[in-house]
Image (tube, rainbow, N blue to C red; front, side):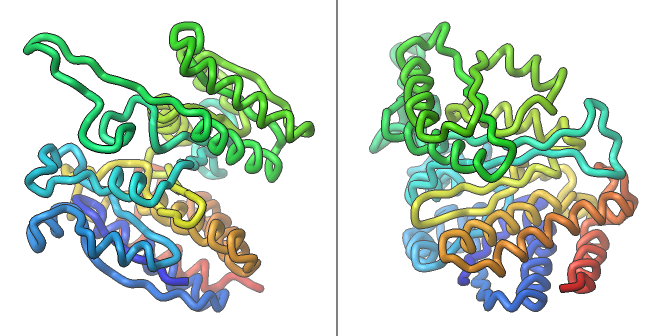
Length: 355
């Protein structure tokens, strides 16, 4: 498996260095045959090439089996005419990574203030309210007058169908329940179609239970009792907000792994940002990128029919739980270690696993 590695901005190089160490340890332990090809995006690419991402980099990623994208300073990138392109948006759109899979769970050894839970948010990734990706060219936000802005949202039946299918297929591997989150009481046409399509797809999975919750009520329900939920499927912006909440409820946004998956390509990406205020201080939690790397390995294994990749992913997830329970982790999740030291402890445990 060939993986392009882009460390990113801020804490990205620190946390990606740990994720790379973990991938190499998994490669040695499970004989994966990984080939990691390092490149740059974000501020470093802007400095070297005059653009945060380049056509040559996109082609390199297209030829690879997967991409690991470090946190990017996306808020800094405002003018695409000057090469300031949001790398996350760029790859999601150019590679048609329609499904953003974001798990959230509690771990033994951490205080579970809301009780133990294990859920996944399945978020549509290519349309919705996101003005930089729901039209072919330009932005769908328009300045009508100096005092009036109109923002357009795109919802399409094919995109609804494929994100619903991703959610129900995932639910079949878990506890067989899907919650559809929407705002159809106000967005009657767009979210109404989203619900209808989810129901249609759901009929192909009679073993999977279905319920529907309005997004504002969902925020209250998931804070009160997150253990009620298994797989949550929703549109782009709602899923973005909800998945940050569920990651934080698990104990830290630093636990928020994320996979952006399409038919032919996938990208592992931490759910959090580049956190420039703590960059270079050896305190950032690397678990989000580690978990994202595991999800990328699992995706590749399922796609290619290679069980050892799924075994490696499961082993990485098991070691995440072990390190947290042992306190061999960063301070935000109850440990005392720095970023590098937490990575070293993780690699030792992964290498020591019995086969």
